[in-house]
Image (cartoon, rainbow, N blue to C red; front, side, top):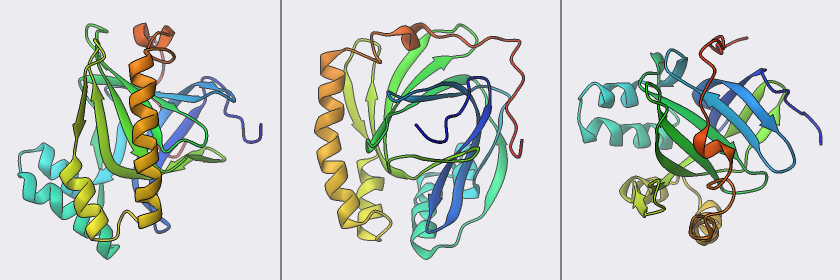
Length: 210
């Protein structure tokens, strides 16, 4: 397997659209095998994200978030630094798949809040960078396995505006069934050690550009 990332190293998980970075998250590598690439980020990590997203987080409203999709279609967006808080995330990236499985934990208690299946382009490792692109459709999975589709309106808007191509939409259509079957089976990664993972508080923060 080429471009193996070593456990403990910093990897920058990036969403890249039309050759431009849309998001950049510095993460700690936990595992890189033929089965999966597992990355983690947690409160205190500084990420690079669109200004429309941070404005929405600060209460600007749904119209501002929707503007982010229009910006993607125009190829014109601005980024800013944002310090992550409250939750720790595990990103379990599956080679060749059009989705990743993410475990979301309350950082203070270590409690697993939910699983989050993120539909995205198959990832590619290029040096320190792990590049993909979020296709704006998600599947929330509770600790009990209950599934709830979310952000379908954003996905539909991205399709109308050409952010998600027809070829990508066909790939997502197939991936939906794969993801639902994986959840319904309740096997790996849902029954594995990642479900009870906790970060080591002594870990240094992964940093952009290192």
